[in-house]
Length: 336
Ligand code: NAD
Ligand code: WQD
Image (cartoon, rainbow, N blue to C red; front, side, top):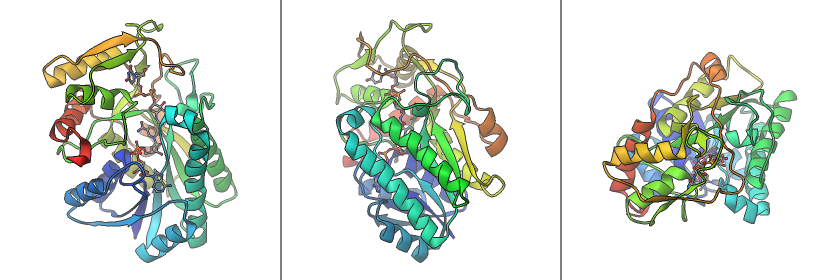
């Protein structure tokens, strides 16, 4: 049997594919390469000794996904395929509704048609909006502040409904802020366009592709005035998916689970840690707040520990050292 990894050529999907292989599973990656490159698939191949089937196509294509499930003997699905930029979603909301909901419904339809029940869904801490209290737990209030967040919140609700009528067993994994890269330096984040996330932007400044990191606000009600987030190593996050698939048979139905470290760092702390990892300063300047940013959020991690037996083990300096190893070796991502 095999695991179907939709969006498996992307940042988190590629690391998860490798972690699944290391855990003894056979992997099938389905990706339309809309935000990734076939070189990422080559990187997975190199790290898994070629033990990978790659299908290029749209996860919303029910026939393609059904055929792939049957031909490859798939019995579990990890669904990453989605667009992920908050700012892009504000500019192109329909593209986000169509792609993120379309691919989710397509995959679930294909699973129903082929009687595959077990699924892990990429959700996000974005479903907590601006939290009243930190850490946020899985029972904290949810909401959507932008079209991207809407697709995650409604994606979760859709899956809850399908599970409630007995159609699926699913874990909704709410990721906090993934950073880092595979420790080999051969696989990492390579989204198209100028990055909007902190660490990818910072690393592109460090390799000289961008001039200066804008620090969006140092006047928040936080210890140093800059916003606080829960950054976690992408390899820890990848291992969380293996743990979730392993835990599904004993935990049928639908559950939301936070995947974070339980510890927050401010933007200025991340900049300082990156400068330490690189051994040199990174040009940055405090500018106005970015609209829509929350002051602070980090994860309550009890449920992940209890249900999945999973806890993040890699710290901020390891995340930044690994991210830098990848970026330094590949200043232009997989294009180099
Ligand atoms: P990514 O863009 O690197 O990976 C997503 C992959 O899905 C890409 O390879 C893209 O080509 C593919 N894809 C998109 N639409 C598709 C479709 N219709 N059919 C087939 N393939 C398609 O993003 P990522 O950072 O790896 O994120 C993976 C998932 O995790 C997404 O669902 C994202 O919303 C979610 N997530 C990401 C973060 C983060 O900060 N990176 C945080 C929380 C949740
Ligand atoms: C982190 C901090 C910025 C860029 C987003 C999505 C969320 C989830 C994770 C998918 C913030 C600051 C950033 C820069 C900066 N993704 N920053 N200069 O906003 O916590 O979350 O990614 O689900 O849904 O909203 O992550 O990396 O964009 O920002 O100062 O150039 O870094 O203000 O405080 P964020 P981020």
